[in-house]
Image (tube, rainbow, N blue to C red):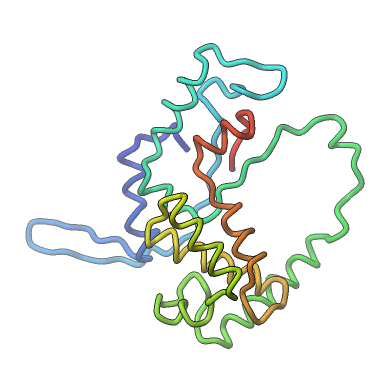
Length: 206
């Protein structure tokens, strides 16, 4: 992702937020539908191996910070899931296959989407006022989210995106209510790139 020019990346902010893009010309402004799912990947630094076990970056921590800084804060604010994936080792390749296969996962997703449509909206498209009601967490979840909002200086956008992710996690589990464990998982999937890379010893990100 950081190989793209920062201005190009920031041009995605509007369609990610609104699902449309506006083209402005001298005599007119035209809005086009532009709803899409963004999936991106990046290495921890330009060298590709900084901080990973058995490797070292030629420029040290500066390489990772400069590389990741090419993605602006407002752009990161619009990425709901930021997941760090460690390098695959030979031992990983020898592990047994996961208990839940693709067909089972697809069935759970289809069931979750069906339940969301019965509520009137997919979680990603749900208006904020409806979200505040449908995704209202239990007391423990609300306390955890408030604590995270203060300690991590969450924006209003981040706050509501965490609620959307937590509501989706609950849907995938077939739960009617959003609980603390769902808020915790949503928060764990939305960590700052630089801080998380440092804490995870520079593991690649997706």
